[in-house]
Amino acid sequence: MPVTDPIIVAFVSGLLALLSGCAGAALTRRTEYDKWLRQERSTVFAEFWRQLYKAKVDATNAI
Image (cartoon, rainbow, N blue to C red; front, side, top):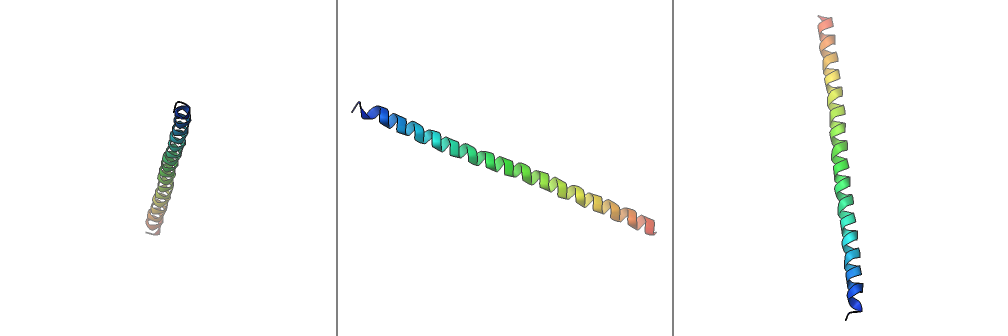
């Protein structure tokens, strides 16, 4: 039994390292996606305000 103990420990350690790496990658991907989504919303919202301001200026100039 002492011969298999180091093998089991190495196997379990490798498995836990692999699972931790996958979990870290998933969290990073999710965080980056949320960041990208916030940036896109900000860009679209800024464009909306630009168009709204332009429409206000055009309406004021028409009067």
